[in-house]
Amino acid sequence: MPKLTVENAGTFDVPENKRLVNALSDEAKIDQLHACGGQARCTTCRVQFISGEPEAMTEAEKSVLELRNLLSMPGVRLSCQILCDHDMTVRAISRLAGSGRADAGKRPNDAIEPPPVWTGKN
Ligand code: FES
Image (cartoon, rainbow, N blue to C red):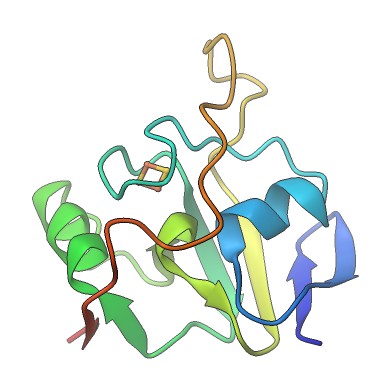
């Protein structure tokens, strides 16, 4: 079972291959934003990796990070496009608290959407 560590929140066991965005909400109990419902459109599900950043990236994540000028920011990734398949440590940088939003967004489905086409960050 992979371990998810969230800075200032703790370390949590996460079911293998669970979407990181849902693990942040369910296991880590973080008020993680996911305004587009996990569709790789909004970037509010972004986190900053401290360790264990995945090599693989979906094409959908890559294109939206490029569009928002986030691709060059070290460790910044979209949690809705990442599966917990190894140990990782992240900083929660996009939370409901202080965002001014009414809610975190519709719960993302269990499977990555859109259906993932895997590529690399570079
Ligand atoms: S990009 Fe919107 S929830 Fe991930």
